[in-house]
Length: 253
Image (cartoon, rainbow, N blue to C red; front, side, top):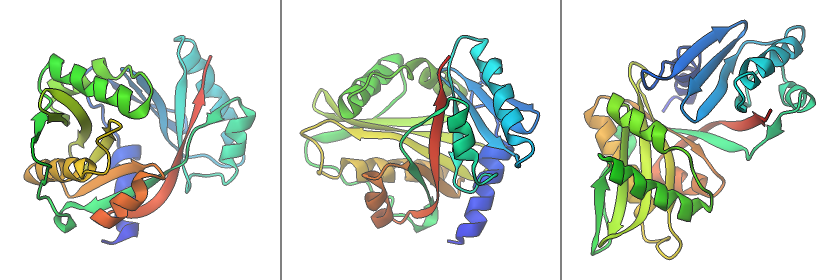
């Protein structure tokens, strides 16, 4: 895979030319930034800043979001400019989250054979009850409560989401979702998690393969993941390549 080509395609398709995933979401071009406003996720996804414009543009975003009574994220990539943008965000009151690695694979390079342990099955997420099962896994796997359910239901209705729950009998033990970005060549893998007691049995690998297979049938070229430190070595073994790092900077009113 040509990494420079893939990163350029990612920056163009998912940042500069980003499109709403559902009819209720909005993408706004304001000044020198691009903002995404969605159900449960408000974010600055791209910026074109320099030493002379950065502070004023950062300051302009805060009242735009906080006037709505909600916090927002500035999704910073390592190649964003100016080079001291992280420090400028800190000075403006933003709090950095955990750094993640942007990893990308060409789907044609991946093994899409789904192998599951005996007695375990994949359940496609198609109904409200399936979304609830997925949120149950998320809460157990990550130890935090999520408010993503409404957004996932909207994405299912818009056909921009593919998701699976791994079932051990009647028990949901792992889950993951994939967002589809039409016209970009990219699909994004998100929220892959397994409950304690079921880790190390290949469920994460199976969920990657199952989503890659669906993306391939729908004509997508690349899979993208914002990988944690724990996920990165697994994804590298599966054929994903690190392109850059990304850090969420959040602002709470």
